[in-house]
Image: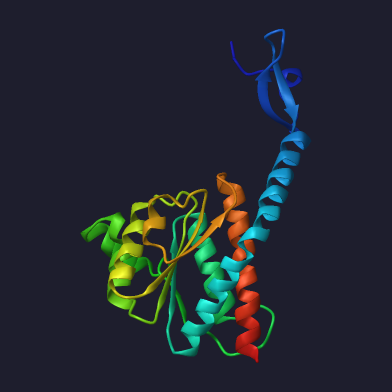
Length: 218
């Protein structure tokens, strides 16, 4: 006999997490309730950004100073954070809102040959650090996106960046994790939940892009 539930027993596509009711029978929370929690969590994290405005502006000023003297920004991250790193690079090499000159920015996750070569011949923990060692110099900025702050390849890269004389920026969350030890500038989303941290990182990079974009277009 099949153990598949009948149609009547299947939870609705618009239902969310399953929990046990007072009778011990499973009860299903409406998906709208679960989604509402996401909205409230996002709004709470966004409201917490007010206190971080000085740090975000400092990051924008740092990039402006770096680009003005001919320096380069290097960005990195894993998974969704890699996408955020590429997002910032796209805003700077392309443009945010204004037609202006491109700004020198490189994302260290985008060269598959280099990434797999280092991971294969050395270790995945070295995929960013070895690139930073080769490329980053005094006057450059190395920015890492990480929700945990504990990814070994990010921690290693920030440590090498500081050794090379580059300025380091950490887009993190919570207390910043192990990576915070090697960050000259901390941009920590006011949340410990990965989705909220990533959402706030996008807000931060857009805010930074706004000021840098206006400067470069002037």
